[in-house]
Image (cartoon, rainbow, N blue to C red; front, side, top):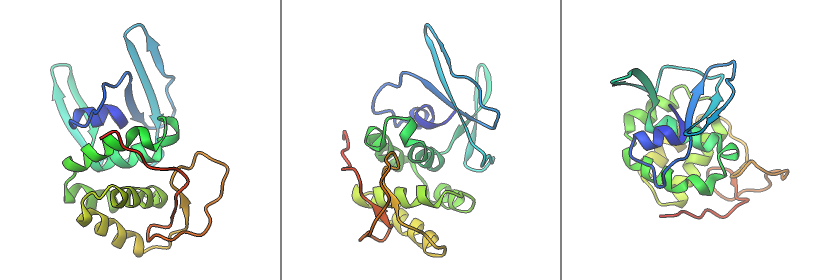
Length: 177
């Protein structure tokens, strides 16, 4: 389970989700939409068992992305999930569940620097956990990062930026909380 389904599992479901979200390896499955069942499948090429939690239920064993992986997956797939503002409240709630070990573990392998830049910027803008902001910033500082748009859902190119995350702010952040 991933995205909003994993967020719900971690207690960060600001609003009731209408679909279940599953992230798998390729090949991509077709989404399932029947009367009371609505499942959206996403694929990833960066599959790992790190930042994945194993859970047991009466139906068997299943895997759920950790709070850190759930947050970056939401940010990474924002254009397919209704935009960053739709998920800000969920990100805020997930940040309360986030542990330093989970975040450091994610930074050790997560390849999408632009997503990490967006995460650091969002945490800073929302005034959330300065310690996590510094951990992310120090990790990014060790590599070369380039300006990126906060919301990549446009044809604009990032221009000059005046923040440490090199984020070109092309939308206004508005949280429901």
